[in-house]
Structure formats: C-alpha cells, structure tokens
Length: 253
Image (cartoon, rainbow, N blue to C red; front, side):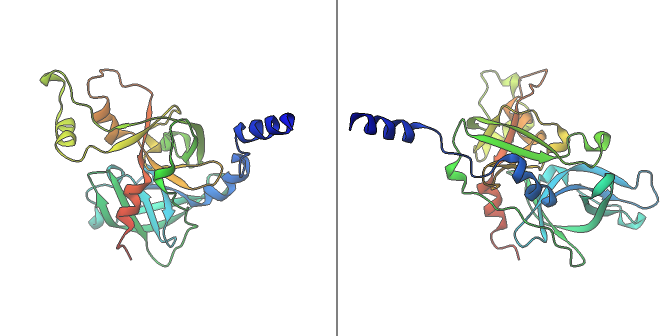
C-alpha cells in the first residue's frame, strides 16, 4: 500500500508529457509566418524587409509590431505595403496589405490582406496561464534582409514577467521614450533567455506544446525603455503579452 502511494505521489510530481514536440509543431506554425515590408517594382531589391508578422483571426489579418509598419508609403512611386509568405527555395508570394489599426502604447499593429488572400491563422492563448520558467519558442526572420526569407525558430524559457519601464534614480538616465512609458500604462512584458534580432520584431512567441501564441516579440520598443541606462544593450529578448493583441482584435472586422 505504501509503495503504491509513493508511486502515485512520484507520478503526480513528474512533469506532464509534451502535447506535441516542437519538431511536429513547426510545420503548423511556419505557413502562418510572413515577412513585412514594402514593395516597389522599379527599385533593387524590389522588396524592402522591415520585420516579421503572423496571421491571426480569420486568416486575412496579420499581427506585427507598430514600429515595423512605416508611417507613410510612396504610393506615387508605386510603392506598396506588403507581406511575403515564404515558399520553397527562397521564393515567396507577395500579398498587398493595408494597415487596419495600430496600438502605439503596446507597439502592436494589424494589417489586412488585399485581393482575397488568406493565410492559416495561429491560435491565441489565454495570457493569464503564462508562468515564469515555462518553455517558449518564436519563429521569424532574424536579420531577414541579410539571411533571407527563411523562417527561423528559437527556443527558450520565460525568464521573468517584468514591468516594461523601471523608474531611474537619476534624471540624466531618463530618455523621452522612458518618460512617456512611465507616464502611461506600465504594463508587464515577458523577458526571455532566447536571443532574438531586429528582424524578429513582430514574431509570434508560442507554446511549443500547443502552438498557441502567448506573446509578440519586440526588440526596439521595449529595449528603449527597459534598458535605457545601458550604453551597450544586453542580448536579453522581450515579448508583449498576447492579451494586448486580443484587445486590439476586438471590434476589427
């Protein structure tokens, strides 16, 4: 009887088996990943890479960082805002898109595919379930203008759930971005132990067991406030919790 109780106790203490291995999950994730940029047929290269995005909602919407999307497009010179879904052997399909809505406070934006294009959307998780120490992965285009349009996946853990901005002891340590952040909503972000690069901005941070998106990778927006006193920024990566993307999706048709 004692041995049976011990066996039961040990069994409940062991980690639950993974619902799906990352190797099996990636073929479901990668078709939803796109490169965000501008396209102009007469320039070389025609596609200017700006960041990563991923399909959400009905498959006609693409989520990314607001700082990835340019403020203006040279439409008089036939420039277009586009996303590129990668194909085989460095080829890809170009989808014209339009900006639907932006949330500058959380550095998020939604784009809509034009011309009836649809991509497989990624499911969004309940952000309240995210815990420090849990395994995560993200897929995007690190330094995409150099390394090419091949989706790359990194894996790590949530190292901390931490405020986006921290008050500084000295006024000289404050920069305009940090002042704006501290005067507004001081929300929490996910700090990760996996290394990301500027091209990863807008990549989905997902649970490798379920494929559910738990956050949106961010390089520029968070680091400008979180690491404002560092002259040499660290290699730490951050992500915006998915709950803010859920709010942005509310009311978008």
